[in-house]
Amino acid sequence: MPDHCHMLVRIRPSTAPSEIMQKVKSNSSSWINNNNFLTTRFNWQNGGGIFSVSYRNVPKLVEYIEKQKEHHNRSTFKREYLKLLKHYGVEYEEKYLLEFFT
Image 1: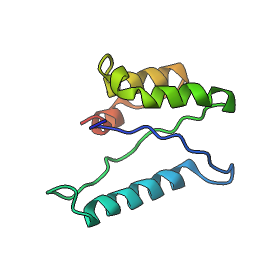
Image 2: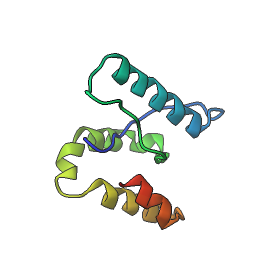
Image 3: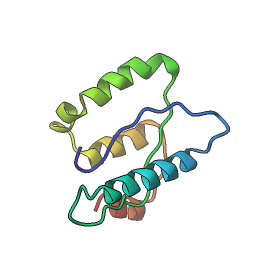
Image 4: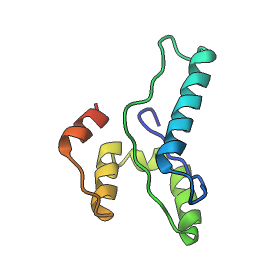
């Protein structure tokens, strides 16, 4: 998707989710910039979201990720993200979301 990506990763309980995001963002932006895939320098936006899923639901999540282009023709990333926050009872401050979605 042009404005976000979904990833399914399995991490050890001792690994902080923020550490995973830092490594993914750092390594991928370096790779994109070092290979000159864009005419301008690539940077990820600040922030992001990490949600856990039970092993039982992995096949359903894989299917969702595979069909995300189709899904996002019906729903924006912002709408999807806010729905997830609400579904999981995650409290958030609107001022941070405004930065995240601009």
